[in-house]
Structure formats: structure tokens, C-alpha cells
Image 1: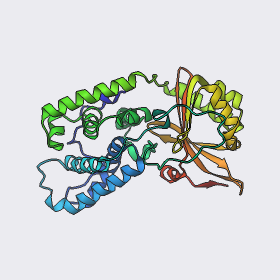
Image 2: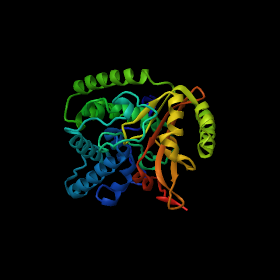
Image 3: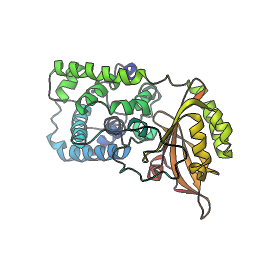
Image 4: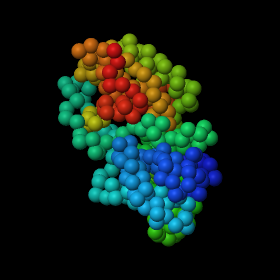
Length: 334
């Protein structure tokens, strides 16, 4: 993970683009995207992140007359957002992906089975919702919303998670984080060391992501063969040990051959789908519209395609049509 390469001037006193006076409630809106990105890393759900930021804004608007300016407006907002996120995480299990929770499924299964509640699964996030528009800012923050990194974050206790994001992603100083969390610099340093060790263990097992150009070319080939529903050609794009998951269902598959069997068996309803490019989790993704018996195509899944060494290593199909409006997409294509 390259979050530690974030800009050295990205500490809490940096003003948000377009931010107004602290006395102006509209000025708070300039912080919405970066706060949503922070909450998403903390919570693993774009919907929970938006709810957390809305609650943060409400608390800030109500308390603006009590803001005394001893800290920056940005620091004050992050303090509120951190408390909101910690409250939401209290008593809640970590969000995960299906392959984190059980063994691979049989590719001959007749159905996906019953979906989970949704509270246990990691969700994708549109770049526009969690990443800044400034190209310089984007270049150093996109890696910190990659699905693998956000999934690894969920293995940290909530306060360690906050410390690592604030220190290694947002580049706050230890004293600033200690003040925000009402703790000591020594406690922050200790929490950061433990968090880094956990993250290193989890990231060591993850293959290096493909170069952007290599990945884009592979993604283009994937779109072509998926829309033709040429499963032999699709399987040829997969690494032998590739993984295929479909949250909010616990079903997941390991191995190119098993993925091919699934797509020609229980998954054959995807034949004739259309794929549209979207930007999610700091990279390229695809919105899948599946054929509708009533005519046209209906929103079906947001696909995150991960690759390494010229092959696809993971296909994560988020079968959650409610995500489509966040990406500015319709629920149906004619």
C-alpha cells in the first residue's frame, strides 16, 4: 500500500477546496468528499459513510456557534466524524468479502442461496464520492481506497484503524492525532505500530496490482468476451487460481475452471449483459446491466476486476442495484 506517500502538506490545517468561513454553514460542504473518503475507509460501506458524514455535518451546523477556533475547522470536523464512526462501529463486526469468511463454493450449485443482511459485507465506492477532484490529491489518495486496502483496514480495531488512516493516509502528526482522540502521543505511536504490523501481514499475501495500461487493456478484452459471453475466452484471461465472489451472497469460487463452470451453469443468466465503465475504489470498474425478461436491461452488479501479471486474479461482483444511483447510472437501459 502506498498511502504513506501522501503529500506532506496534507495535515489537518490544509483547507478544503472551496471551503468558506467557519461561521458559514455552507463552508462545511467543502469538506464533504474528504470526510466521506475517511468514513468509507473506517466503515467499509459507502452508504454508512454518507450517513456518518451527514450526521457529522448536522452536529457541526448545530455547534458552529460553539466553535472557538482553537483548532482548525478541518480538525474539528474530523474529530466529530471520528466520534460518529467509532459510535457506529461499537458492537459491530467487521465488514468482509465472502472469501474472508469461508471455503470456496461448488460451481455446480443451483442458486446463489439467501443473501446476507448486507451489514457484514464490504461495499465498493464511486471515486467521485470518496476521492478529491484535484489531480495532485487524487494521485496520492487513490491507493488508500483500493478494495484490498479497505478490506485489510477492517481487520484493525476501530481506534487503531483511525490512527492508521490519520497518520499514514492523511499524514497527520502524532500530536495532532493524540489531541483528536484525547489520548497520548505514546498511545498513538503504539497503536500505529500494531496497525502497521497487521496491515503488512495482510498485504504481504496480496499480489502487486497491474500497471494501469496493462490493466486497462486486459479490462477491455474482458468486456469484449463477457458481452459476447465467450466463456472459454474469458477463462483464458483468468489466472489459474483466480477468485470470483458475489456479495451480498456468501458464494465464492476459486480457480479459472470452476469460474467457467459457474458462468455456463448457474450464472448463465448473465448472457447478453451490457457492461459500462465506471470509476470505483481508485480504479476502473464495470456496471453490469443484465437482460430483463420484460425487455431491455436492468441494473445488476458493479464489478471490480483486479489483475496482476497480465491475468485477472479477482472478480468481485457486487450484486447490489442500489449502488447504481451513486454512480450516476440508471436502473434500466432500453
